[in-house]
Image (cartoon, rainbow, N blue to C red):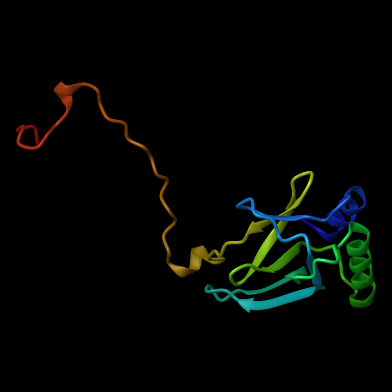
Length: 156
């Protein structure tokens, strides 16, 4: 999800709620402690130089039960960040600490923002020597007993 999409959604919401893919919610007393840009420059295992840039939201469970982040407040934080940090309309990555700090992609289900689990992958599959995963097929059992082989039947 891009930053512009979040900015379009926020004015339509009464509350800002983040939900993990497993159905649990980020506690409603969370704070957005950072909105910024993360730049990642790296070389993949095939030797290709890559550059990635995302907008980062960091969510923090503050144990502050007196406050709740409202959509207009988050929109204000985003606008201020865009102005001060010259943030572009990039994809959003969310950091949230459950058992450890996790990085999530962001989607919206019509009511809540969903923190989608990120996965790792080889970016240079053609250069690193790992064979592509073969398509798995399900073999069904034959119902014809005459054509089936069993141990000690002499058919094999």
